[in-house]
Length: 75
View 1 (cartoon, rainbow, N blue to C red):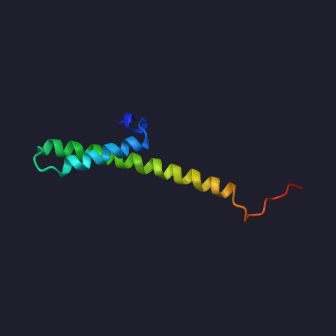
View 2 (view 1 turned 180 degrees about the vertical axis):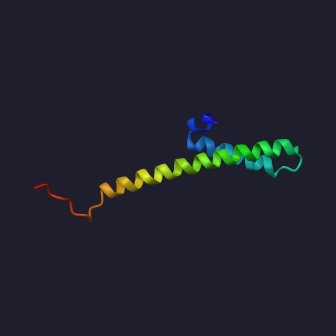
View 3 (view 1 turned 45 degrees about the vertical axis):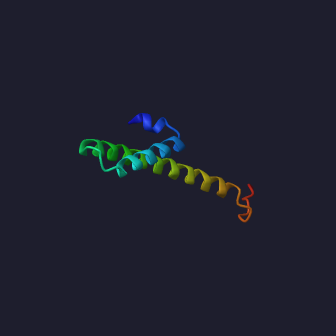
């Protein structure tokens, strides 16, 4: 599933939406439903990891640029 990690967040979310729409159909075979569910879980996990990394990077940037925290002067 390394290919999923290489896809952009937006593309992964698009595919996840497609999977949801397919799963909402009632005429799919059980095996197809299971395969789609597994793919969807992997995509959801990957998207969550990407969001957590982005959130972490943003918080680091915010800490670096916080004007309310006095800078430490080197002595």
